[in-house]
Length: 281
Image 1 (cartoon, one colour):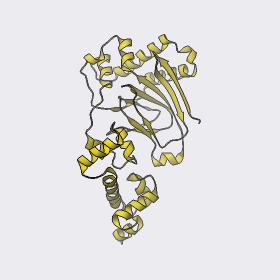
Image 2 (spheres, rainbow, N blue to C red):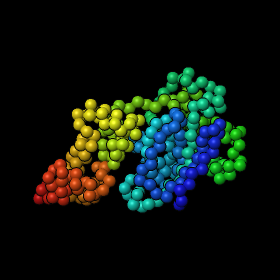
Image 3 (cartoon, one colour):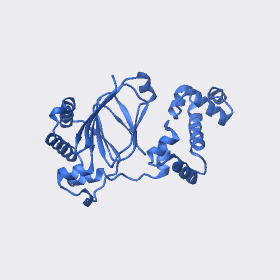
Image 4 (tube, rainbow, N blue to C red):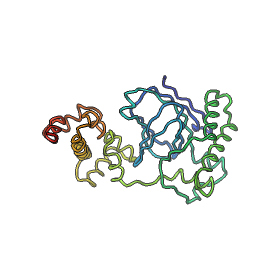
């Protein structure tokens, strides 16, 4: 599979797109201007990590995401397999939605309690996916009227499965990200392999601002605090003889076994293998 990106444009903005990637560990998705999106998976499987959620998506499960930063990522096991992914995305922009539905979305106060949501791909959504794939492969068919109708059709399909009072309320809620507390973001991603830069990106902060905030909240640097917590969890996991050292390293969020070994020995005075011997002797 080769890297491919094809997008259909409506009113100067991308609205439907197909992206194929042969392999990746983690990819950032940064929202551009309050757009929400939906992801159909044609091939492969991966997870999407937001501030306090990690959801799996595959060809049977799509993903609805509000306008926030998040990451596409593969588990260590999925990275070893090396399979690629092929997805179709639907991008929903407030000005376009207001134009299509002739409504002022700011007048609705409706909200929902999620930033990411898994959606079962039923027969209707699967049919829609196939129709969009045809348009992407044949862009000469995708004139403005066609794209407008397809966007409207998609919103009506999704809104029917929601509990929103109307499709306008459904749309309005999509452009209102739920606030997540700083500590919740940190604790939810403590055992991920996110770097400090990536954690800051997830919280929509610069790295320097994130570090200052972290020090205010926890009283120490993010690197020191997070490494300590990872090692504490690893210490508990190493007491179980069936847990391999390499698996423990990845389970607590280290990217390599060598980094895990160095960090563990620095904090405990023993290598993971030496520590295990003292616990299981």
